[in-house]
Length: 178
Image (cartoon, rainbow, N blue to C red; front, side, top):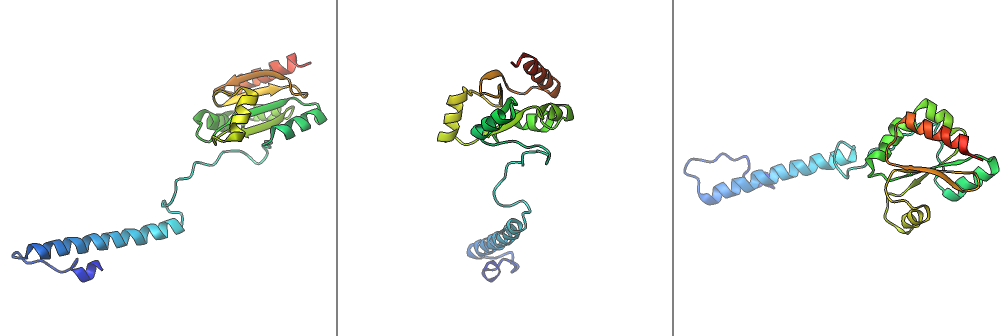
């Protein structure tokens, strides 16, 4: 359409105002059409258009988190292992930092084998999230709570802790566990 209006037609020095506006409108329509074509293909081929997705949570295949507190406590009672429960949200930078620096650490991963690991997503502000926040007294994230196999809270921390500090907490809890 922009071509037909005169986007590529040269203007003479004595061109009328209407002719200049017509050329400007033609150029605008050509640019608009080019953008529509580009973003149409870019979205189709995931080349930067479309909605912005949050970065994927980094977890290794060896990491097995349970996403249900009820299931975690059932497994804990059956195996007589304590529960390590991590409350996170996708928007929480410190939660991602725990995932990227602590839960992937080989020493922490080895220590986690003695626990039933449960990870509860509190990203959405819905009834389920509010229920978990009330039930476990979650104020901020990340919050990590250690429970005995029978569901008794033994220890908790909020915010980021490095791998060394988390290992110390895990060992202390294991020593204090009945």
